[in-house]
Length: 156
Image (cartoon, rainbow, N blue to C red; front, top):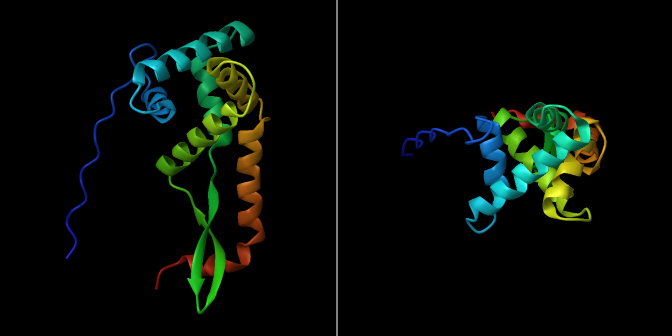
């Protein structure tokens, strides 16, 4: 018999913008428990975004994340000795986690300080360009190509 699922922790909003998504993103950005370093990188990137675009950095951040969030993805499913790539819908929490991971990953592959790289990737994502948006489109394309196996996604 399975035990009950642990209840979700209450997320506290970040101290500067008062946004829960920003806090979650900072947690994704953090390495080896160094939260203050992650905060410095993120808030530095937000200052750069504000200077470059002359717009609200939180709105641009949310637009960038929503442009990168995937709606469907493929999951490997083994059926009768064959492995199929089955397209499944992505839940909101996983979509945000994937978007964060992709934004941070593609920011790391750019040149400059991490704050500059993150700012550049966020601006690119908000304008629907850059590596993270391409990754989302590739994921959607893969799901579209394997649409024929969608009926394997349902549990019996």
